[in-house]
Image (cartoon, rainbow, N blue to C red; front, side, top):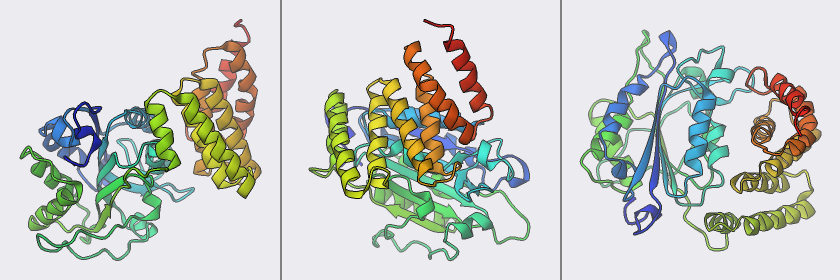
Length: 389
């Protein structure tokens, strides 16, 4: 990253590093994820980030997905380069068969409520500018998850030093945002008859390489880690290697991000509204193209501190998705309602909160989401708001 990362330029914003290591308890544990944290913690923050200075957030065996989401959201809104080191195991929820990162309280029957949905990474990282987000992953999967991800046949081990890096590949279910670079591996299910807890060999190799004090470019770090892990007897499994996109002149997302970073929130919102209108005319107001730009506007309102506007837009998006026939437990619908609920709780004007509350309560009755008591929370808050001026 040095020499290619904006954060390494003089005067640039500091980098942000999120170290996330999690694995479930008991017999369901496939990897000792937290064992890698001492190795990574010994690396200077600037080396972890590849920038002159960096802030590091460490999450060791977190208990609640919402706690992880809060830290991820804060990291994603930081202005400088962001590097996520994620170690753990993937499990599928029983309802939608979507991959989740298991946390410290996760069991196979509680994945939907106690694990971290992988698509939340994509949702939180989507507004980041191109070329400044990197995920380095060491993930383990059981047989069911491995097959569902469509990677039943893992590729061979890495080539010799100096060989070309692995071709870009990423299972669609693990999409982490179109502009993020992704490197790492998914370890396959153990072939041994007796289940053993695996080692995060790839991430430990990454940590050992970075402890030298030098941060090579991402692709080189990835290749060296694969070679080092293989030399120690660790089979790589499914290799993840996808370059992030760089800043593209004229890309509307890049232009919007630059406007936000310079404090021109109104300009950013107006540009997103123009693209939403164009998409609505070309594809229909409830099309994915138009709803994408509506979601961008909702995020921009949040970044500008206008919680009421953000809540309103998310409510409109959620209703539109439901009206087009999307299921109440579809990830895009749940995300819209969850974000509307979150922003509603941040509205400082009681009058505006009362205006939006009934629509949120109605949607919550149809989309209860993953957190128990969400509808009751809205009703209690609405009752309290009735007594405020």
